[in-house]
Image 1 (tube, rainbow, N blue to C red):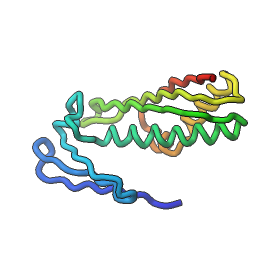
Image 2: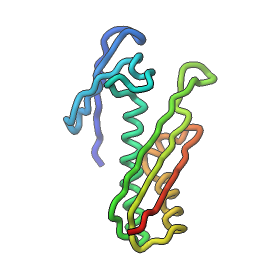
Image 3: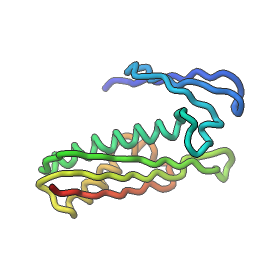
Length: 148
C-alpha cells in the first residue's frame, strides 16, 4: 500500500503564528491555519488538525462501511457520513481529542435494519482511521438505513 504525505509550514509563535498545510501526495490543495482560527467557533476560513481528522475519519469509515455492506450481500446506492471531532483540555496538560461522533445515512438494498446496524458498528471498529484513533475517550455512531 502507498504512503501518503502532507506537509505543514509555520511562521511565528504558537498564538501569533500561522501556517499552511499542504496535501502533498494528491496535490489537491494548500490550506491556511492558525491557533486563533483553530480555537474559534467558525474556524475563520482556515482548517485545523481536528477538521482534517474528521475528513480522514468520515472518508475511511464510509469506504469501510461500503466494503462490509457489499460483503454482507447488500447493494449500496449512497452513503453520507459526517464526523464531529471535539477538542478538550487534557487533565495531564494541554489539549486532547476527547470525542468523535460519526453520523451515517445509507441507502442500501438487500440488508435489514439489524444487519445494517451490526455492519455499521463493525465498520466503526475496523476502519484504519478508527484504529489509529483508539485513544479517543468516546467514539459514537448514529447509523440510519434509508430504504428506497
